[in-house]
Image (cartoon, rainbow, N blue to C red; front, side, top):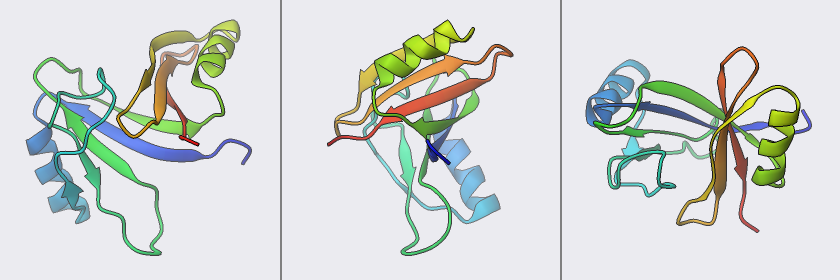
Length: 126
């Protein structure tokens, strides 16, 4: 796959309850708080999944807060978020968010495809 899926995200109005639900259903553990780009989650309300050493799967996070719309997003790795946002629009999609930098240096953005599905774009630092 040329540009792999590298992250997933679940957001809602009560991120603590969402994390409890995911922990109960999937056995996931979270590092809370985990800082992310503004617009993704309220400060200190986001939790990254705790990775299993050598285990399958991709990292993810659960966050949001009272002002956030519930939803799920998967993130695809790109070299340049702004360029990918522009290309998505040229292909009939719609820019929803970004680019925005997280404290880690990760740059993210969201687009909607022509059918309205939200997809995240992520440029890894370095």
